[in-house]
Image 1 (tube, rainbow over the protein chains, first blue to last red):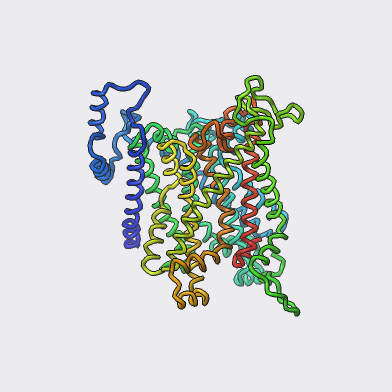
Image 2: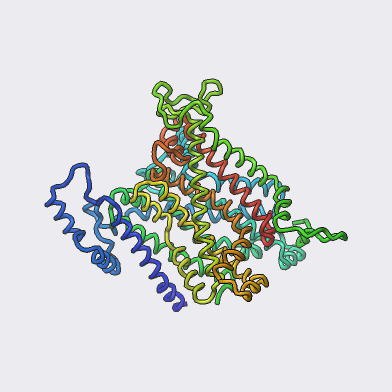
Length: 311
Length: 303
């Protein structure tokens, strides 16, 4: 187990290095710089600024410096928010994104698996066709289309939920209301994908001999489903969790923008527009590491669900 | 379930031997009986015709503002079927122009990913051994990258030019293709006709091009129909963020983003492009599903 973890850690290093290198050099090759503004700075001041942030050094040296600092856990100072470090910004934005993504993931898995299993039980009956048509709609309606429509209905016309922002109230005293629409919008596509996956694998599992045996022994449908069929049917769902995480993270960029949530996705877009080199790099590295870690976790769950996949 | 489980679903050979049927005619007959997929294909056909010829048959130009007709609601008789936008431009013409752009991006980017993916996957699968390991390791590494972030970055940093959109989106999607093609190639290269070609001294590059690639067509067709909607989605996602297609050109993503700004007073600006976008994605997905059922015999378990 320990050996496996160490091996995976070592394997993730080249991935992260490539990611950092691509992002770093792409940003530096782009026109514009962090100190461009409406009013041009005096040349001496700009030169001083560049020197203070080591931007006057050769590129490879800056890259080396970045890696060296990163290895010590220092993401560097932000160019845009001058008085804050990137570490502080990530620490401030991530809880918002995590809440959004975490709840969305929870809903996606619970909702998707439930819907998919129900559809499989009623294969080729109206309930099945209905569920799958809804799922297809969920896949075909992009979240940035769904978001304004939901806001229009639930915030503007009905006035049940706030249209955006994080609100002042603490989470349990009504603050959760601000998250309802963003979480639902973000989760819906993934609910649809997971429902389709679950249906497919569940149909296969329900056809197998041991399920027929269980049925012949007179076990109830619920017992068969929960105790016997669910675990093997979840294998493809688990392997989809990696792409699902990536999808949720990407989706949150748009969702945070639409609902005005101060999360990492918004920082990322703003940072890229303002050439905030360190902030953008920091977020890319942070999310890259997160996705790698999550993929590892998924592999572990995979091994637990399907012992054959362990080497 | 009360029905008989595990009963064979495929056709049981009857007494009279039929003439041999090719994969394609077999697939066609399966597909023809799939009502959802056929409807999707017809709708897509209509959409393509509309998008190609609609804008030039319209009385209005898609990019010409008209300050007297700002935000006119849609009407059957008023001349603006879908209404106008906040600059007085005819929304019907704009929706079709946007569709042209969205479909173009969808098809071209898919082709880009197709070419890279087939070349990469077929080479890795056919050569095998260490080359295969290295090439697939590279795919694994790239897989772990948060690609959307890099694409967003690319668009932000290097201006919003259309060729870049094609390449950037195509470049994310080839990884899946490479994996699928490699898997197929591994199976194909064991077959006799490849063996025969090899024995008669055909060079590997030629075997890949002439014998492997044509046999991958079935998988490729399925993949293409399922990739196009994804690509359209990515393009509209970028355009929604203001990073994709630029004025005066438009795409459905741009229009949805513009429409969302004014949806309380002029919901039609959001609704029409949104509905067109959703219908297109819907049709491609259903058609892709149908094709998979028809062309991929192992995947008959589903519908």
